[in-house]
Structures are given as structure tokens and as C-alpha cells.
Image 1 (tube, rainbow, N blue to C red):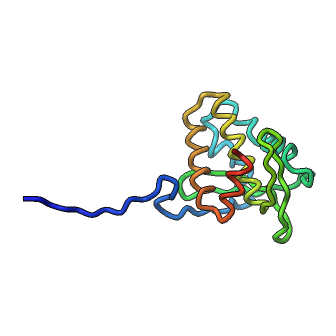
Image 2: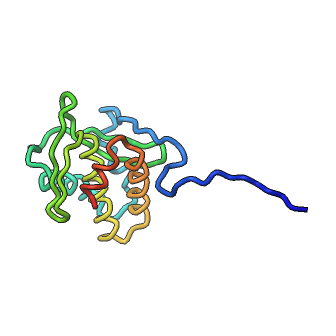
Image 3: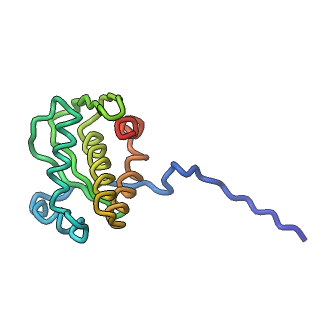
Length: 152
């Protein structure tokens, strides 16, 4: 007797469910890093290093308030606050790629870069997990191709 089953294969690059980002309320901002990254060595250095990556990649960036987000898969990231739907130009001297992207996509990109560097620096599996959670969100983001281009 032969049984035939059908299954639909999903591309490895396609998330199996839609991920969502939820802004952190202002009253929870002070606890964000400790709450989501507190078990990671040197977690206190993540925020200033993310700012430094943005300064390096974006001439238009001059500091300011950033918003914090949690992801439905347990991830978290931050992105600059900006008025309107203005696009920022980012240029990565390390790979020669330049892109126009929203501030949210720019925040995702620089967080991915810092998460990757921090995971390598600390050899911390929990930091690597944060990278992959944010990467999964980035892969389904409307600007996924620009995010991947700038971090390549």
C-alpha cells in the first residue's frame, strides 16, 4: 500500500507567521534595556553603540529621541522618532551600499548591525537570538530589501 501526502514547502527566507512591532509606552522606557537585554554581558553599551552606527551611516542624523519596540516573537529594537514619512539616506562605507529608507527601517538596520557585533564580541547566545528575532522581523518588513542591502 502506498500513501501519498502533499505538503507545501515554504522558502527559508519567508517567516511562517506575521510578526508585529509594538511601541513601548513612555513610562516603560527606563526599564527597556534591563528588561529585554539584562542577561547579556555589557548590555549597557548597546544603546550608545546603536547611536554611533546611525551617526556613521547617516549624515542627516543629529541625535534626538528614539522609540523602543517589542516584537511578537520576543525581540526588541529601537528607531529614531521623526516627523512625517521622510526618508533618510544611509551609506555603509564598509560595503559601499547607499539606500533611502524610513526611520523605522534605519533603526532596524543599525540595531541589526550592533546586535551582530555585540553577539560576536560577547559570544552570548542570547544576543545572537535577539539578532535573529529582529532579522526575522526585518525579512517581512516592507523595506526588507533596503535593510538587507545596507547591512550586507
